[in-house]
Amino acid sequence: MATETINHKWGMVIDIDRCTGCQACVVACQAENNIPLNTEDRFRQRRAIEWIRVERYWEGEFPNIKARFIPILCQHCENAPCEPVCPVYATYHNNQGMNVQVYNRCVGTRYCANNCSYQVRFFNFWEPVWPESLKNQLNPDVTVRSRGIMEKCTFNIQRLRKAERVIEGQRGERITDENLKEGNFLPACVQACPTDTLIFGDWNDPSSKISNLKEKHFVDGGRGYKLLGDLGTQPNVIYLKKVDINAEHKVDAHA
Amino acid sequence: MLKKLIILFTVLGGLAAGGLVTLLLVLFVARAWWSTPFEVGPFGGSPEQPIEYPHTIHAGSGVLLLSDGSPKLDGDGNELHGLGLDCTFCHRNVDKGESAGVPPVEQCIYCHKVINSDEDLPEVALLIKAWENKSPVVWERIHRLPDHVRFVHEAHIRYFTEPGNTMPSGEQAIVAANVCAVCHGDVGNMEEVKQVRSLKMGDCVDCHRDNGAPTDCTTCHY
Image (cartoon, rainbow over all chains, first blue to last red):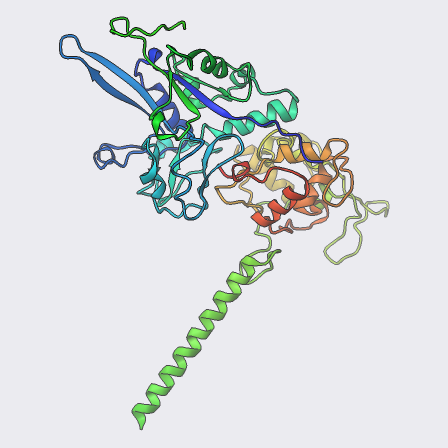
């Protein structure tokens, strides 16, 4: 009498061509996930916590200079370098294709952060504190991580768990792109993105938008690529490269 | 000679003090580790509530007893029984969301503006005073899980009340209250609400395994 569980494999497609570098995803993530305030001195010590960050690169020389943006979050690698190095099994791959961090198991060795190729794991060097005015904005569905443990992007698992409960448990429907969006179950960064750069979905659902995009763009001349793909980490997050009309080697966006 | 005696007594005293501290520590850890918490000193048991709310009168259905153990009688000499309200009558969020929720004062007043509102019951008077002052009743929490655990009442109530699913005892749950009793015990017949199950992770995982529920870490920890 096991409960019927539909196996999902959550993933994301990031269309760099649409990203304007507005940082809405970063702010949404900070607010949703109880991330401590990143003050200037924390940035200077390179200890700021940003589960998703927008990296900026400059291309060309002034005056023909262009800003390039790339949002980087945990790639939820199938073959994650952070997982085998954890001595206490605090980070592991769950059956939904997610790389998860179990806060109560973590002892803070920081091996995982050192072994991560994408620099998306963060260590809590301090006990998190919020000013009195912000205490009521903490999300009750997310654990506040104390000092001495690692944290990372969770794909907002608290919302996905709720989606499973509401959509699959109560209504008995399968989770699709539409009902994820309707019920506000998409990760906060995806929800906040004004240009639909971030697209979230289920790789196991052949009709989902991300599955279609992968099919369309992982062909010769397509825009799809994986971040540091040659490392063989097999990320569950894929990128679509920017279409540059002035580039010498044009890629056909509609391939 | 005197010096030797002093050293001897110091060592013996130190050992005794150390032994006592160790004994207390062992007791403390044993109590925490035990499957069902038992009371040692100030730990465990029921905290004092701002209003002595009797679950027996509201949720229980048995004969109400006075403090000396004799049944409570009405004006005509008949035995008084509890109302037998379902848990969800007051804890209205329990089959809708994560937390069961404690009813707001307003919800108590729905009934108590009529029932016993003009009688000389000190506990109801406290409630009406809170209502008039527009101040919440600060209940003491008894069942508390650590911050890194997410327990969702709704999913558990829904699963066990679905036809075809039986509770760990093998019985079929008919109302939500049957399911509540699995973890919280028979609260309806408790004079003072107490935690009856350890509610530790092993307890959760055992039940999840027996019922084919997921045992992935991220089921509860995120």
